[in-house]
Length: 194
Image 1 (tube, rainbow, N blue to C red):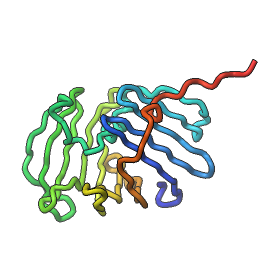
Image 2 (image 1 turned 180 degrees about the horizontal axis):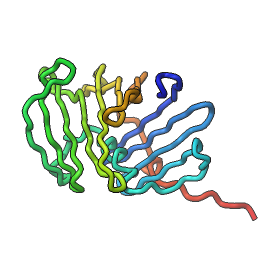
Image 3 (image 1 turned 30 degrees about the horizontal axis):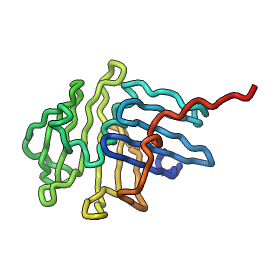
Image 4 (image 1 turned 135 degrees about the horizontal axis):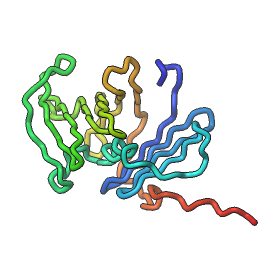
């Protein structure tokens, strides 16, 4: 981030159906964002907050989108989303298939698929955050096959028009590791000693 001036260690953990936890570590401090399929919470020591606090529904939108292990297209009908084919569009020299995915809350995502392998190469998320329309562009690449599934190991993401989107390079992808569902849930407040 910041033009490559800062490098964070990131651990992203997802579990079906729709849970995610991200941990970002920089200079010994770890920020946590988590969603357990119902509620979201965060710990943000970079903002001086060391205790977990609930996340607002608007601030959760991106995390909820990322929580889908198989991507936004997986089980879209079951989740009450609508999908339509919107033709093709040039994405960095590739005539990508363009899909329009409408969320239940009215937010939109345009998902662009590589025409040869039908893997996601770009996601344009248009969402309303505190009454303001926000567009986030995420480019995906360098897919690696792990346990028979292709995973993007290079991701670039930022608001539309940003000159310096955040870039994530994954060193390792592990699947089907045992996890306790409580790992994603809001921790109980620390008990003060009286």
